[in-house]
Image (cartoon, rainbow, N blue to C red; front, side):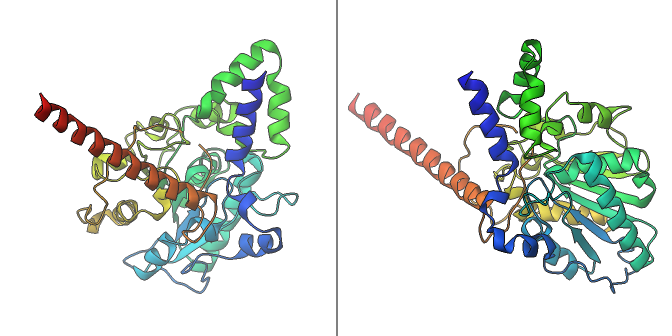
Length: 345
């Protein structure tokens, strides 16, 4: 059973990738602190931007970690911006999104109701990342949220779940051996939502009943081919008349952002701006992105974005850039050797 154990450990690591890096002493502060530009409940939407924007973080993150980049940009553009940390477990007070989806979704609903009451707006626009593209679907479909949402922008979405590290197949194999309930119960003791992201789970089936896109909501999805957590990345593509899909590398081929990095990507931010205000959409600029050679795309669900100042996700982004540089160096070295061989011949 060594492969079974290593995959289980990997799942737990992915589920809590951000939380384990947050000092316990600052846990409650981290959960409660909004990102810059967010949660001014005296904000009144303008005629140009009549819908408040609600930011929904990913698995293991908090609102401050996930939205430190995008939130102030939206506020500077005149939006009323709001964010929440949902789904935290008192036993692990350092991360959000770890309780079952059915319990997190009402928290989002209560927060949206508070935003609508404070701003006097009729609807909100949602911007979600990772689990923030998955959990709200339950609220939209089963808890009456669809009537309160106009636009929904999804970064690294996973509507069909993930087969991260082959865990969905491993679960199915385990069911034939009668061990899956034991494994899922063990994982659920740390992260009640983690097993719900696996392709073929009961939650994935529920969200896809009748199709994942809910009528009346305008969807914009932003998958990345380099997503190492949503596997395959095409799990985030919506085939629906009320959905527009922007695969990141189709917009900017030289953008190698993976799962975490999307929350801090200027190209993604431009796509979000255009989706929120399509009447004033601008051409997306790819200028300033490093012209590096990328490693082979992978594909993967769950962990979410920390701030640029620290955390496991930040270190992962640095490792990703380092891998790209090494890959580029190896290509250059091979080309040099080939030229030498050609001259010698």
